[in-house]
Length: 251
Ligand code: ZN
Image (cartoon, rainbow, N blue to C red; front, side, top):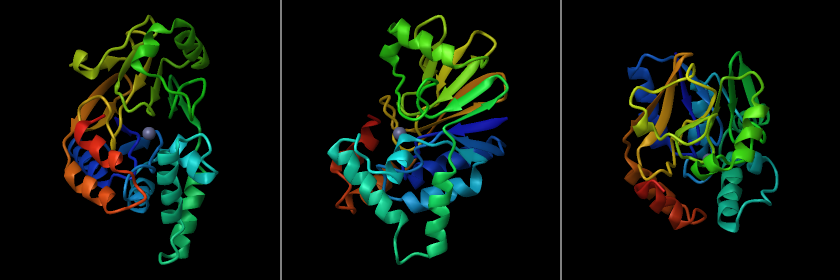
């Protein structure tokens, strides 16, 4: 059994709530699909926790943006990325800890394949940056190309859009509420979005993650104290107000 988490976005309240639930379920293997940092108020704490508890984390677009000039982000997102980069370089913190952060980010893989399972942050054809969103279910050319890029994999786990659900190869999009018994990967090939821990965008503010036993994918939601995270965001002038507001709305 393994737990998959993604898009933590420097939100330690959401991460701790999810880790407590994963412990309660008795799952010890935790994998992360990227965007550990960006948007949120506690990049150092979140990254340290992931380095300690996850077997690995993939490279997300926010880690990628943090390691180079984030030219393809809008100005507000870039302000948050620039602030995050400064936080990871703080001179009042141990130098070896800063060094460990950058070494960890630099070692993040863009994709991992394990047998019939492919893990990426974005999409099978552009693992770091491309979004797969519910309206893409109607874009047959895009979806066919994504499935072709999966090779022999039966399932591809993704994050990035912050909208959990299943895209079966035959078409459509299934929300977690349409799958009370989970999704069996034996049904057909699928791309599975595991949702976001630290900034959900499907209208439900609770943190999202999945549990996977090699056959069935189960979606989980965990309530957390987003009010505490909102207060921390508002205490950082470089982080725009909408990054706080959206946590309460789950948008
Ligand atoms: Zn993200």
